[in-house]
Image 1 (cartoon, one colour):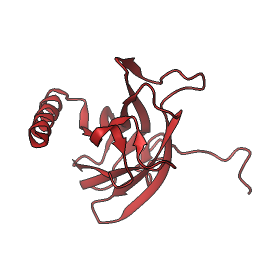
Image 2 (cartoon, rainbow, N blue to C red; image 1 turned 180 degrees about the horizontal axis):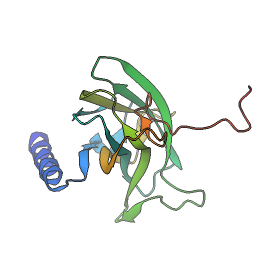
Image 3 (cartoon, helix red, strand yellow; image 1 turned 30 degrees about the vertical axis):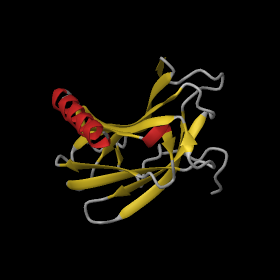
Image 4 (cartoon, rainbow, N blue to C red; image 1 turned 90 degrees about the horizontal axis):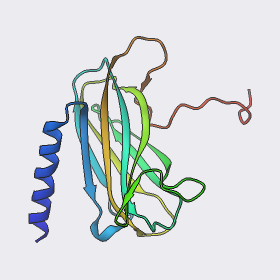
Amino acid sequence: MLPIRLICLSLMTCFILSCEQNFLFEEEKTIPEGMWAYRDTLNFAFTVTDTSALYNMYVDFEHADTFPNQNIYVKLHTLFPGGKRLGKTRSFDLFNMQGASNGQCSGGQCRVRSLLQDNAYFNTPGEYVITLEQFMRRDPVPGIRSVGLAIEKTGKKKNGSGREKGLIPLLPQVTTCVNYCSP
């Protein structure tokens, strides 16, 4: 039964990808039984050919509306075409401070699209692999039904203005030191 479901999910993903022209890449991975375990690493492989294009990158979560936390911590790893691998830990808010979902909810399920990085570009053409792992104190984390990665074409090109950001180790928003950095 599982192979049939996997084939159907793969075919649906291919169909959706073929219709959606604004995305370089978009894929969703189902979490077995809605229980995301440490061992359940999610690999998203995609190929970049245009190193002058700018992209917005998103992580998508489908979760139960009863998810017990406001946020979820995720380890992100990027494998670059040359073999270099860099990682970062990131927190994604699934609910706001008042407990309302940051996405759309229906029938006990919520979908949240979280910005990973805007105006990103890839320095090197080739295959990239982004790996996501849950990094919560609980193993497994209940209520996460699927996780996805989407890379949206912005239609813009790098221009050297400094507003664009190369693919950063993985991919925290660039922050500036205001009150917490020493000179």
